[in-house]
Image 1 (tube, helix red, strand yellow):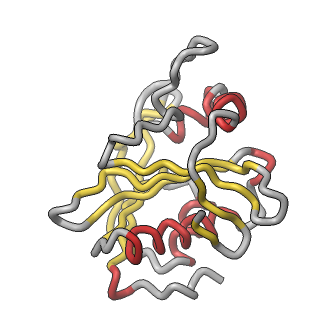
Image 2: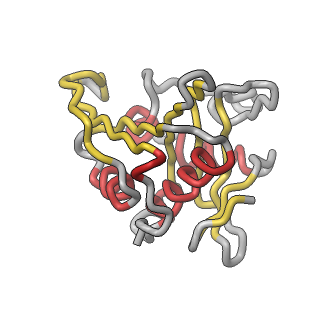
Length: 180
């Protein structure tokens, strides 16, 4: 398990999937804001590609996020779009509604940075988030990410186009203790 100060990133367990599906992906608005495509229902019992881990997939490493104290599941985290040639990847996370506002997002971003830079030897990490996602912007910037641009009207979300903010962090600019 990768450990932050408040949360840990561990492998996805089968028991995590129904909780994550119900609390993150069955919520139409939340799912529409978090995913790159439109929300659609997944048949109960079906293998949800957003949650089922394919251990052979080299370009995506999904984690379940748990509280260090007690081990309670609080969300998901992912290193995706891993490009071994250019030594870059994207990071993302989703916290259960009951786990938001507790500083977990900043801790998850810190743990993903450690995984990307230290464990994987990457040079660059990138985040794309909706411009009104203040929590993610704050978590990224607390970890040293720099706003590199705005993708104007690039995301179709619940009937309207929204801007996305592009943030980047290079390994030489990363300060492991900058999260607090």
